[in-house]
Length: 151
Image 1 (cartoon, rainbow, N blue to C red):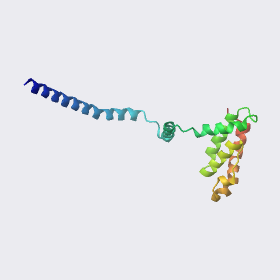
Image 2 (image 1 turned 90 degrees about the horizontal axis):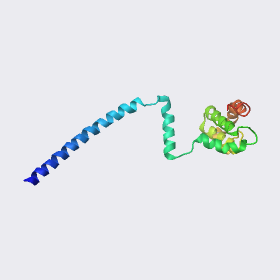
Image 3 (image 1 turned 45 degrees about the vertical axis):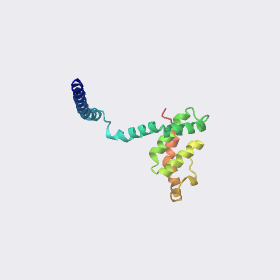
Image 4 (image 1 turned 90 degrees about the vertical axis):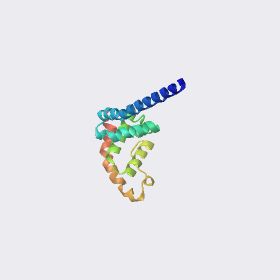
């Protein structure tokens, strides 16, 4: 008899604990949803934040930082602040050149030589005619980066 009562008490307590846990778990998403909705960044920052999270998860280097790291040695001796010049060149190239292939070729040229350069073999044949226009677009910003650094 004592065994039956003990078994029944254990089963009832397990059922009550299970029900309490289920109820608590149902409330957790609601609380979490309220908390995260209050902490949501503005929609304009969401893509940037997602990109930062992905990079940190994959431990990928920051493209701008990697560019400056490769570019700066070419600027040493030419400019007082090579990192500033390289960062400025990267920012203007990224903002001014809309075409991905041309932008990547330009950034490659700057990081490898320290000056805006685009080799024709770095660009698809269909876009090689746009190289001159790309240099025209970045001429003034390049001069500003080199002779009027933003520090």
